[in-house]
Image (cartoon, rainbow, N blue to C red; front, top):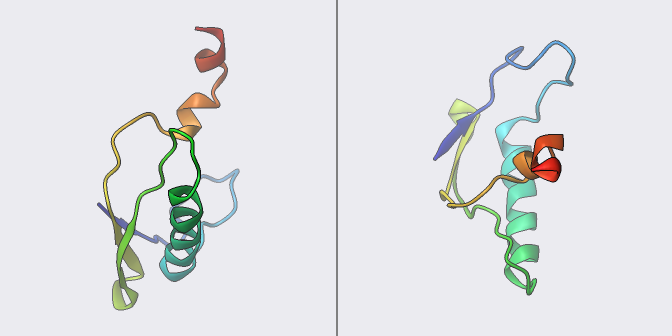
Length: 77
């Protein structure tokens, strides 16, 4: 899966997202941490950084996204 930073591509009520290199480093840190956690959680493995495109590739991970678990409907249902 490839994710590319888009200048001014976010929602008006949210801060501008991090550039790809910053997201790539953060994802690498999270991936290393969750690899050693004995829980049924996973973080996509960062695969490649494309600095000239301000984009990065990461592994696809099947399952429920954390942001979907945090929605009120997920707690109520």
